[in-house]
Image (cartoon, rainbow, N blue to C red; front, side, top):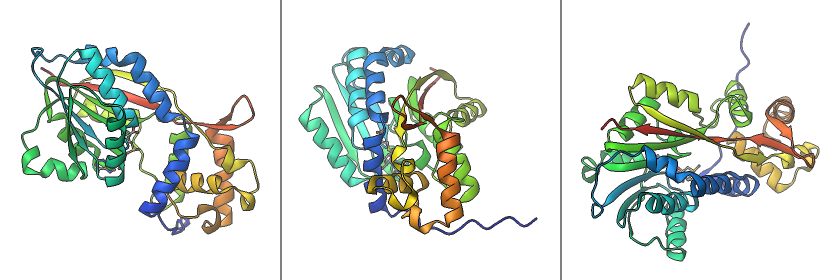
Length: 299
Ligand SMILES: C[S@@+](CC[C@H](N)C(=O)[O-])C[C@H]1O[C@@H](n2cnc3c(N)ncnc32)[C@H](O)[C@@H]1O
């Protein structure tokens, strides 16, 4: 039997993506949960680091896709306190100039004493090929919810791991597979020409195993997205936020109006009945938990 050709729907423009991302950020507790997790648990990461350094050595950290810095600032502050180093040199590789600006605003408002920043406004792939980055090595590399953008998984992991000092750690934050968000992306993969980028924690674990990179710890941070706005009204009456959230999840422009009605109705049914659960007030909650995978460099 011939497979139905997936409809060609316009991919979200960069501008629309950022608008939709802001709506997503308001309706998700991801940043808050990650920040709280790092506040309470950074000592678990510090324990995994096995670098031998004297107190006056500079700790070097690379943040890949640091975004607007709300999560990363917390990681830096907690790591600095847990490890007890007075000097940290932090390289931020982030291609979005507006995000770098917001990150700089965050650290200007709440300065991190002893932390020196080196801002690189470029994709990691470009940074990795630059001459000055060739020999850069780090004690800690963080890649929180940005591994999806680095192209081929094995290549990206090999590149990141190769930049670690002996005994250093690579901290990867990726989606937990098999639950709400993962189920939704799996479904979209079968329905759209290209679906949102997704790498599950088990895919990362398997890749690390094959590449002989030891995963020393995995921590699950429960995070949820309230998708009620996409489901609580007939689709022709959805609020602006509801429409933007659907655009964010499908990475398509004006999904509710542009998608063929069958696909739209099926997606909304799938989102409500297969991916989300009812919260205490009857809201539809999508589980989008993050797994923090700690890869240790064999020192
Ligand atoms: C979902 S956000 C995560 C931001 C932040 N780490 C956090 O957890 O809040 C993903 C980030 O990766 C950045 N990004 C996209 N492509 C990238 C690339 N090729 N190299 C590095 N970062 C990239 C995006 O601009 C965005 O800031």
